[in-house]
Length: 136
Image 1 (cartoon, rainbow, N blue to C red):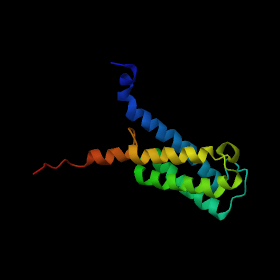
Image 2: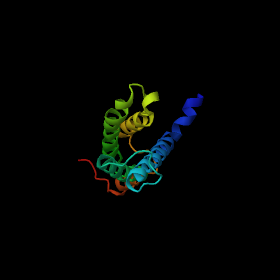
Image 3: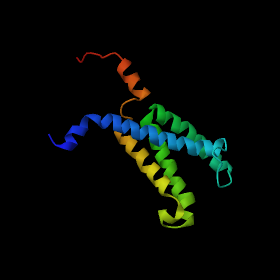
Image 4: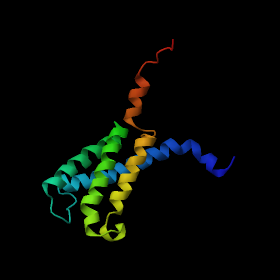
């Protein structure tokens, strides 16, 4: 068995760690826009405040692993919109417009749409508790 094959059993846990760390970083962006902590280096407009609520609530749901796929789809779209509305207006290149984070969040959330939450997700508990019905 090759080295990568030895790592395969850990894939659900690694996916969960990616989901949890991404959510914690995303929640920080939401608290920055909603509660002013940490202090934002820009003015918080109504649009930023609404984005902050989406980031805060969506980040918490992703962190918990609840409704991961639909919430990740919503957050991926929000980050795509944020990139084109805010970062792209500054400069074309992500290294110059500070849009690297928005791009990474967009594609990590898009990945979660297809991959699901991994292990350690509260959404997984709901599926296990449903009774198994025999097939006819």
